[in-house]
Image 1 (cartoon, rainbow, N blue to C red):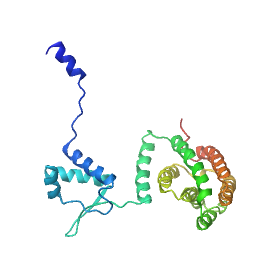
Image 2 (cartoon, rainbow, N blue to C red):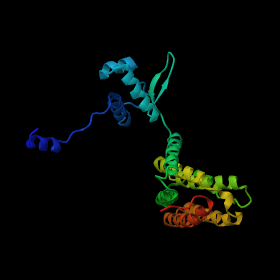
Image 3 (spheres, rainbow, N blue to C red):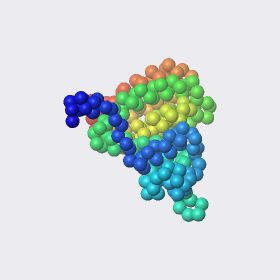
Image 4 (spheres, rainbow, N blue to C red):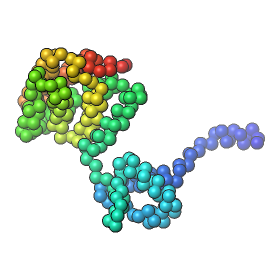
Length: 248
């Protein structure tokens, strides 16, 4: 090969061709995410998809398996069965994300400190929105979650504390904020142990929750945001005692 030919080859930018099943899956995924195939839509049969894409049925089958693993479709058997575009809700998506985040933390590619940092960005702003948007029913639910946990068993008190934070985000009425915060809280809960802290120490946490609720109930967004940020910063020290030290 001449020097000129070698230079041309080195300067040529190429795009690797994906496996056939991934190309099929990507095209179907684009149509699902783009809304062309809405929730509940039944996809064509494997033989029909095979003709449409000019691919073997085994390729189509692998593509459908990939989409199912991404929770984009679900497949049922029988006469009325087939592959259908999923109709996910916030809870199911958050549960799937929790598992993935948990694996990242366990592999040390993600740390508790990262989770706390993300929470510190999300929740104070959510508290401000909650103060602006929460209706009477939502406020009543949030107030119920400010119950004193001092005399509760550690496991029960821990659940109430997490429920307050999730209720605060839910009060924004923004499902995307819930989707982002729930997996973070779920993974944190699994890495922390409330029984390592004296029960009396949770009085301050209960007090903070009451203050945040009252600011939200007054419609004072700025105060709700400030109190939530201060509360989360104070929790850092407690979390370090309850589980893995926050890693930088």
